Amino acid sequence: MPKMKTKKSAAKRFTVTGSGKFKRRRQNLRHILTKKNADRKRRLGQDTLVDKTNRKAVERMMPYAG
Image (cartoon, rainbow, N blue to C red; front, side):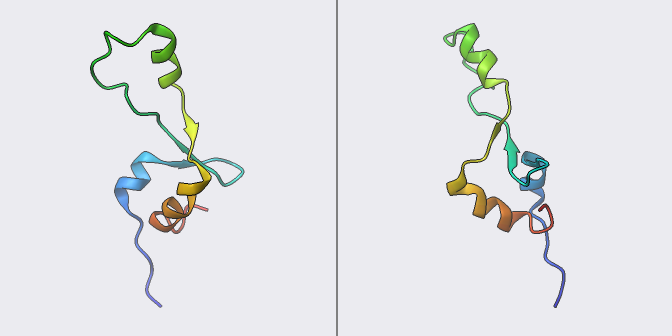
């Protein structure tokens, strides 16, 4: 069976944690920042985990990540 290819766009967006979960960046921190308060922008700058409903899709895009 041939090797499966990793979706390179997904590989740039997600990293795997030690427990096998996927880490991602938060959205809404690119532009229109003047109306967002400092607490919100600080929270948006932190990484978070991919939700369990989307985990299977990310695993399919990155077959060798886990």
